Length: 420
Image 1 (cartoon, helix red, strand yellow):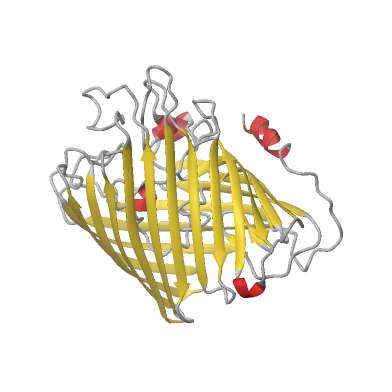
Image 2 (cartoon, helix red, strand yellow):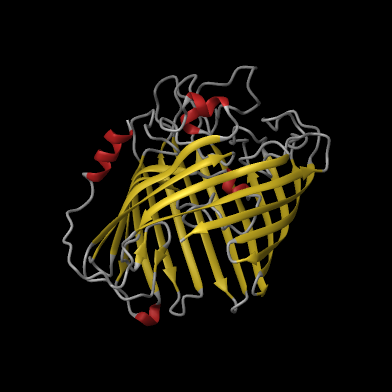
């Protein structure tokens, strides 16, 4: 199945005109990676730390990931999912690739590819997290593309939201409500504008829905983004969108989580999500970022049976929206303070594992690099919920039927980077 899809991705790539100009890019194949482990606890009797831990449901010691990455860099002044750069426009085409292997609990599963029997039976999963071709063409101000399987561009953590080095060990509620990965193709064009107006790129992608190798509804999903960078490259504005029909098959919801809606009549049910991120580097030490999200899922006409949590199948049009603020201060060369506050409202209980209501959280941590290859990060987080449910201190893995509307979580994680 992988070979067939990989070939279909390749045929979508434009023909390339290669030349000997490499613009001092190291085109050798690089092997590198990271190993991340952590320990996390909450302040109640339950062992359930979701949604604070997100991909890790249980408190205690976790091997988050052991990643091995093989990639070949390309010359480019723009990257899909990331945006334009102030470097000169390369005049010749280039092509490369990237493959990421992972073992651990932080498993963003691509349904139809990673859902093997081995991964269904073990908490620590073995995955090929990303596998894609990347390339560049000297069109317009510069054009770059990726084709294969890759992390979503949506959200504040641009490019690869579940990869370190992220600012926090725990994840925001915004991240819990967005896709993790896509399979398909995406391109980005650097728009030729005057330097005094900064840098602008436009991106367009065609993918197999949310986290899917094969989409159950045989429809494609669109990714559309616009990214602006100030002339001094200190201010970034990113507007990202995903839209497509994402209805579930009756009795089969794996392909559309965390939102499940079924139409007995075969009606296609539209899902769209939009994120706006504005970030600013205040000086050489301090950085600020604000992220706003909005999502909407059309409801189906099939309700879940009593064996499922309330709201497991969406039967009315549902929306979610929120805001999070991130602040970083690198007050020493090897130390950084991180602060995050957030609010998210799930108006109709769209998320398959979370009850409707308002979610608030405040997180603080300290990142310490004793060496350039090792990061140690203690973190504390407080969550407060306002609604009819009780999302905390519930059973594992579901947070329904919990007993608390607030939770204090403490954690320490360490990440070792190797190679490259």
